[in-house]
Amino acid sequence: MIRIRELAQQALLTGFLSIEAEEQLRFLLARKYDHEDLQAFMQLQNAAMLGNVQQESRSRLIQKVG
Image 1: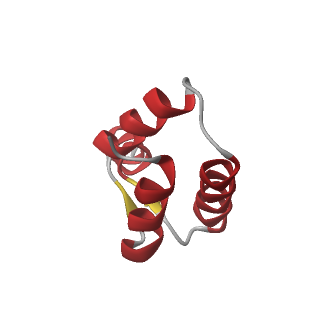
Image 2 (image 1 turned 30 degrees about the vertical axis):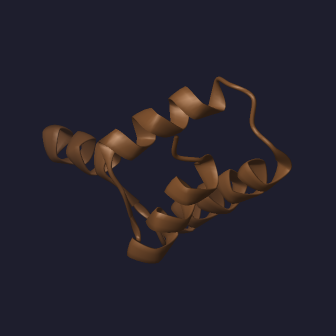
């Protein structure tokens, strides 16, 4: 099974978080995870807030509104 840190690392490397990856993250965050996964998720959140990672879901929402 994929880990939170793997999804976060992929998004940080590509600068993009797909809707599928977001869904996987939600699923994984609802279960038990370790400190490394939590740290990776927090780094991903920070990168998204700074605009270093684009979220597909937010891009689609902006397109619908705009």
